[in-house]
Length: 105
Image (spheres, rainbow, N blue to C red):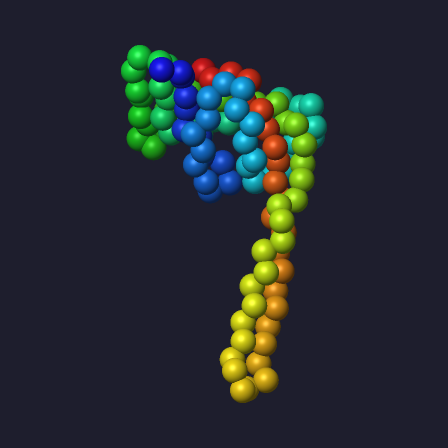
């Protein structure tokens, strides 16, 4: 079994292994080609045993390389009440970061 880790960033959890490409929420100051560390590791499997943090594992980290910053597709929220002339349209595009996992330690 391959080694994997469960990391938390941007309020979401991701199950990652080496060489995975993951889209995470934008991290301030991260630019393309830069290396970043994810220190909030919730679980770590080294191939033979699973270590689970309470809530995080001390000393565990996941390294990743930033590939690009991009924006997710637009999400449209549309509200309407029939026969009342009421309608509201709100759009949102989330800023994301595409990263490639380089190592799990």
